[in-house]
Amino acid sequence: MWSKIFKASNHGLVRGVAIYSVTWPVSSLIQQALQPSGNKNIDLQRAAKFSVYGGLYVAPTLYAWMRFAGYVWPSMTITSHITKAVVEQFSYGPFAMASFFFFMTLLDGGTIEDAKMEVQEKFVSTWKIAVMVWPVLQTINYCVIPSKNRLIFVSLAGFVWTTFLAYKKYEENKSIQIADKKTDL
Image (cartoon, rainbow, N blue to C red; front, top):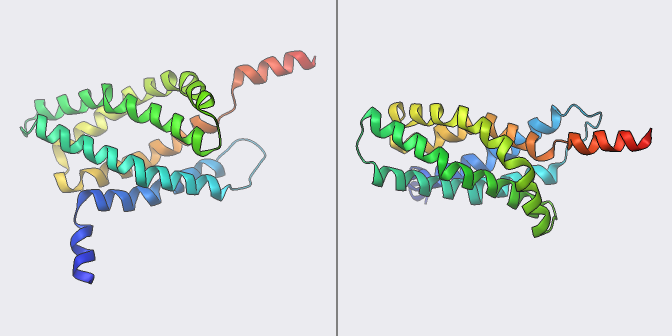
């Protein structure tokens, strides 16, 4: 039995699911602890939602993308690696970010309309930052990291990114706050 478990753990998807099921909720907990608001209560249900989303959605979709990219660009040249990183940023990246805002809103009890609004409000500003970060990280991933450990590398690099995503997801809408303050005057 243990040999079957060990053998399964060598599979990239299984390792990715395990790692994302842990790193995503920990990122949520870190984001909550670092919140600038006076509320220091930790929402364990939110962290559990991050675990479910990270392990059951992000890990499989990222694994599928990496397998696809390896099939389309099997060459191990620097040009091929950079191409994969850039194409990812303009294909999988937007899909992943929009999915995050959409599905996390639904997991939080929002409606489909709420989820669409969340994507519209937060996607562009988040993606602008991602364009500066992820092509560099993915080029390193494709050039230096062995293929069986790429999902793990991405999950560790994504640990910080997920903390940032949690911040973006739960940050207060500053324009609404300003409007509220003006009406109170």
